[in-house]
Length: 464
Image (tube, rainbow, N blue to C red; front, side, top):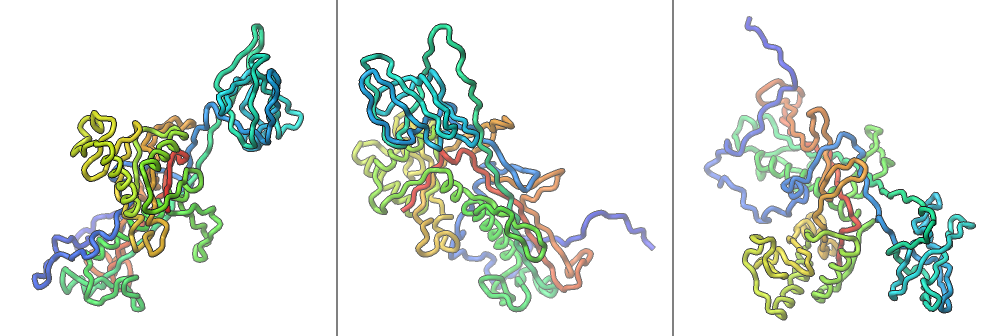
């Protein structure tokens, strides 16, 4: 009797390769009457190299706060007489849970009308409502009136000779948390089909609904089903990374008793802490683009912005640019990538994929995820009007000090085991050891992945 070598791991049969498919009486390629049926945000992030591993299902990062924040007046303050001071109570948003606040004695402040003053006293008799006494710098200078919630900034500081040091400042950091989400897909084929032909029907148990799951109708093939299963996995993953809402572990699986975690996608996160603007279809102008530019400036966004535009918003954006180019006699530039977007201050590719405006470069594409009629582009969906502006920057986590891209995804991985995309077979038919009594060959897919976005306050979502 021959010796049987020791083995480790599970047996599995090989997945049939498309190169082995031979059926001369039928054309060997599936005609794509719906083209690729939508692009994939997940695959885009993967191609850009924006996917990174994490070892925990719950992951987080820190974002620094403004280093010199402004403050708001809680109520209306009447204009004082020339040379007189004014008392300003800080708005609730400028006082933290420990009744801490940023303005200090000696800070010089700037009002929107161009006037300036200096903080000469701070009354904390009511800890949650600090009152600042702001004085003019001369006896003839008159401070302005303030409206409720009017913004005031701090631009300098002034102290007398022999005075002490101002109070110290503790830099602020905000913790952002997200979750990985488990996504699954399954494909099966009967043992009989494994021996009938290499191009064989997909199969699921009786009761499957065609269009929802493949049935043995003779109209589908294993290798095509494998590609379709991967497509559905990418679609589910992209959907989670774009539109997923973070769960709080309160949703419990009735079969396992374990919580079902869901990840917070890009769009809900922008709606939560980013910027939003609306537009009227057919009326977008260059002035709107300039408004978006100024909004990005308010959050100190970088000079390179990626645009993810629905088909409808691509038309809006390009119509605005077309009018701009026609009125300013700027020529189309066939390739403006050679010298970092051209030597001129404004240049644009013939396919409208990149334009420089106000020293900021907008690189955009028609993002078919928003227009996909199988997912977010269903009839009447607001996503069909979306335009998303994402500054492309690398940020440093103020706690870990690690550099990371401001958008991407995180997948579970530890000690060489990755759950980015697992594919395996469980066989009761086909070559190799059988591990089930069913006359079936199953291929399973599983992924555990979550969205990652930093500095979302710099991102802008426009919609009709």
